[in-house]
Image 1 (cartoon, rainbow, N blue to C red):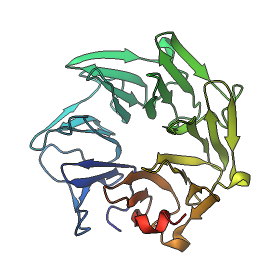
Image 2: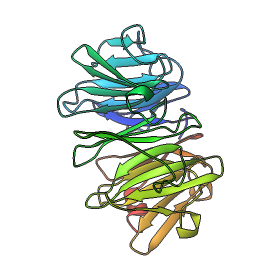
Image 3: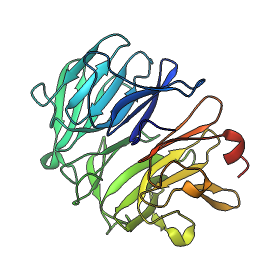
Image 4: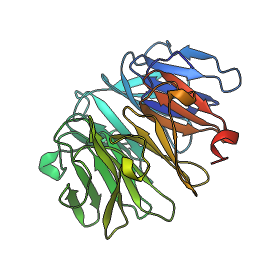
Length: 293
């Protein structure tokens, strides 16, 4: 499905699927499958990295190359480093239970809480300068990964402070591109750069890594997703996507109908269809296809 040709983020807001990527913002009608670019006054233009809908579902946040934007369904508002962000380029977004917003940028981490800004950098305890992926796990611990710059880095933060992890601890590669928590299972970290990387797991005590030899589509892991049935999806940089089933791994590529080779974003709609954002457009994988696995 195209346009958009390049999809880096997906989110569901007010009855439509929002897509963000190198072409900016688009909305997808789930019934007609019509795709329209967002051109409302004040909307971000150009490269979009991240989308997040507030828990109350009233506000859409957009992280993009020119700042952080908020949309309430009628009006847009944008913040930059001049307002308190650690950097103009916003790479990742996550909300916390206290109503705060965590913002990963190309040069640090910001927290926004009702107009008040707090900044964190490498000097504060982050493993690297950039934060391109954020996750709060079921225990309340925060995880911040850097897949934006070659120095990479993985940091956790909780009541005991900051802790960094590296390949010496068990990460397959320093660059962390995606993080997801499996219900009742471990944390999964998608790592890699170019033709190196792997899928690392951490259960709170030990680390282990899966690679192409274990059934992954490719060495570098670009994206991760857990579906409504608890299935794990692993998007690669150049080789399609792998889905873990009870019988092992199944791989989907453009030969199976995938729009592109690089899967950057995933979202499951209320009907159980899986939407896959790639460098060459969107693919809708019907529930009756993947659930057969």
